[in-house]
Every structure is written in structure tokens, then in C-alpha cells.
Length: 194
Length: 243
Image (cartoon, rainbow over all chains, first blue to last red):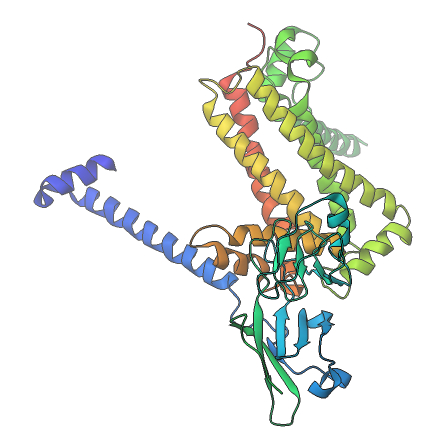
């Protein structure tokens, strides 16, 4: 086989019928194999997934923005989304840990045990909040998989998480209800003013 | 009378021929018969006709490769039993696993056998690799078999990982979330690989089915073929122990 190729490269007129057929056969086999591999990979790639769509409207009491108190944190666990309402408006957090994708859980106190243990907690860059001996309790999220912790506004401050959780798009639909699209990542300054 | 006796003789010849086709050599009364039997018998052929005691000394091999293979057989058989009750769908999987554990007669026994044998196989395969390394048995002319062995280790770990999702409890789902997120960190092909593994954007029904198919058909088949090669190479390269 190799010698066939070598002869072919040296002088294509020298090639025998047998060598030509051998080369043609191997080229055909290689091309067919490549196509089969391509088909296999493409076959395994679903074109429709039937998963929960990324955009949704919160239902029930959570539908209307007036039901959210200023300073509240609301977890919609089956959508893996958090809705925070602060004085300057609403924002939504994608509740997916930025380390390896588990779902962090809300706790009213994610800092006091660290403060007690003497761990230095970095200041939340957005809110400027800092847990201290005098004021050890801050609310936030803890990830059950590897212990990453986030402040209430999704900024990470402890554990392996490399960056804050993503903020996702939130807007007011025409019917006056909240509308969230988890497929749109927004800047962390984004606010929905109502 | 003669006709009947002739027919009986005829039948007896056929029976003798049938039995003789299975037991081809008779009892191994002499070394020569024993050697010929071993040479022409598929099962006995796994070992050479002559095996030195020092080659298969327990304190040398620790029988770790054999144990791994034995555990693979245990896992295949118990896995087959589990398949009669387990449906790989997110609406059934967890309940089926609970049923196997608490409702099916001997179900808990079979499931525990499968689970413990799986843990044990990962351990014995690692130890087998360590033993081969420490005795230098990977050296020429056995490099190719070492390469086959590393693939078998990889398949063993993949079997373990895919099986981990099947009980469909919290531990399974988040372990596979974590595992596939690690795959996502691979350069260039990472996110696409994760999409193919999950069959979607999050661990769900498609993922369970994919992992099930890989666990019960794809990976065992590859493991079996690689094992055939692996054992064949042991036989052809010769035993490394005792000279």
C-alpha cells in the first residue's frame, strides 16, 4: 500500500492497474469512514430537546411586581431563578453555580460561621457590604456541591466559584406581569424599574 | 431382530460421534494427552500448555487482573437481572431502583452486588495497573498491552460514571451535572461535548437514556473486545513473572 502511494507520487504514469485500484479502494474506505463518523456525531446531536423553555412568566402571587417587597429575595427553584427587588428596581439571577453548575440554596445567614472562624470575607464589590464581628450575619446563597458562597446579589465571596452568578433578563410584559428570559445574560448594573 | 439391532448400533454410533465431538481427547491420563487437550481447547488455551509455578505466583500477580475480570462477569450478570425491573426514564428510574431495593425478592441483594462489585472493580483495576507498573511488566515487549490496559481503565471509569446516574437520586443528578460541566471546560469542543453527553442543556430524560445505553451496551461491548485483545496479548507476549 505504502509503496503504491510512493510510486504514484514519483510518477503517476508508472502506476499499475492493481495499485490504482488499491489506492482508489483505500481512499473510498477513508472517505466513507469519515462520513460515517460525521453522521454518527450529528445523529447524537438533538435538534429539538423538549426542555423547559428559557423564557417564562412567574405564576401565582409571583406574577405581579407589586407583590415583591423592596429588599426581598425570591427563589423560583424549579426555574432555577432568583428575583431580587431593591430600591433601584428588579433584577433576576440565574441560580446556577459558576463553579460546576449545581443549584445554590438561599440562607438568611451565609457569613457568621466564617466570621466566627476568623475567615476574611471580601467586601461585596456591588453593595459594599462586609460581614464583621460586629455585624456577622448576611443573607446569601450556599452551593451544596463544593461549598461556594454568594452574597444576596450573586457576587461570590467564598469557595471555588470563579465569578458571580449570571444576571438574566427581566422585563415587564404588556399584561403587567414579570417576564424572565434565562437565555439572555445581562450586565450586573441592569435593573427593571417599575 | 437383526434389523432392530442394526438400527440401535447405528444410533449408538451417532451418539458416540456426538459425545466425541464435544469431549475430543478423553481423560488426560498421560502428559501427552493433557498437552494436546490444552493446545486445542479454547478455554484452556488462555494459559500456555506449560505454566511455571513462578509465573502465576499469587504473591506476584495478586490475581488482580483475574479479579477484575471476575468482577466484570459478576457485573454483567447482576446488571442483566437489574434490567428486568429498571426503566431508564425520569418518571420511573428512581421508583424502580427503590422497588428493586425494597420490593423485589432478592432485588436488594442483586443491586448491592452490582454496586459493590462496581466499586471493587474500579479498585482492582487500579491496583492491577499499580502492580504491573511496580513489577515493570509494562516494559518491552509488553508496551502494547499496557496501552490496551490504560484504555480498559478508562472504560472501567466511564462505566462507573455512567452507572452513577441511573438511580436518578440527587447525588446522581448533581454528580453528572458536575462531571459534564468539567467536560465543558475542555478547549474548543468542550461545550459541544457537554451538549452531546447531556442531549440537551441540563441533565434530564435524554441524559438518562444516553447514559443508560452507554452503560448497558456501548461501553461493555468495547470493554469486552478490549479484554479479548488484552488476554490474547498476555498469552502471546508471555508471562512477566519469575525467570
